[in-house]
Length: 255
Image (cartoon, rainbow, N blue to C red; front, side):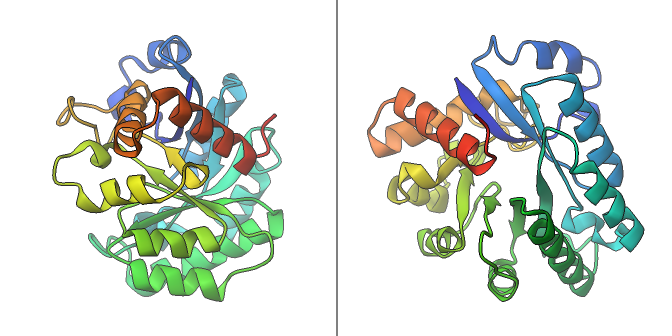
C-alpha cells in the first residue's frame, strides 16, 4: 500500500467521479492521501473530505498564486481548522516565480506568516517552490525554529538543494515528472537521496506520469512514481512503498 502525499480532490476535473474515485482508493493500493489546499475555499473542502473519510488527511493554507487574497482574518480561520482531527499541516505554501499571479513581495510575506502559523501550532508545512529556490531557501532559514519540519512538494531542484532542505527537517516528495525521459534532476534526486527522506505523490489532477501523460492524474497513478524510484535505486517496489508510507506516518504522527 502506498500513500499519495499530495492531491487536490476538490478540483473540478473530479466532479463527475469524485466519490467513486475516493471509495476505490484502497482497492487501488492507496492507504492514505493528503488533501492539500490553495486558499480558504479549498481548505474548507479539504477539511470536509478529511471529516468524511478516515484515510484522507488535510492541509490548510494559501498557495503563492493566491497569496494576494490572504488576510489576517482568513489566516485566523485557517488556524481554527487545525483543531480538526485529521488536519495535519499548513500548506501548500511557498513561492512561485513562473506565473507571478501574486506579486513576489506579497508571496514572501504570506509565506513567512504561514511558516509562523505552523511554528505556533507545531505543525509541519508543505512547500511549493517553482523557479524561486534561492529566495525560498533564504526565507526558510531565516524563519527556522526547533522542531521545524515538512514536505518539499513535487521537488524539482538539485541533489544539493534537496540536502539543504533535509537539513531543515523536510522530506523530499517526488511526483509524476520523475517518470519523464528528460527529468534529469528528479532522477538524480531519486538515486542519491536516501529512502528515509523521500515521499511519493501525484499532485492529482496535475503532473500525470508516463504512460498517462496528457490525461487527468489520479492518486492510483502514484505507483508509477514509486516504481521509477525502485528502478533507479535498484531496489524492490515494496521497499519504496514501505519506506515512503512510514515516512508519511512519522511526519504526521499517524499510528
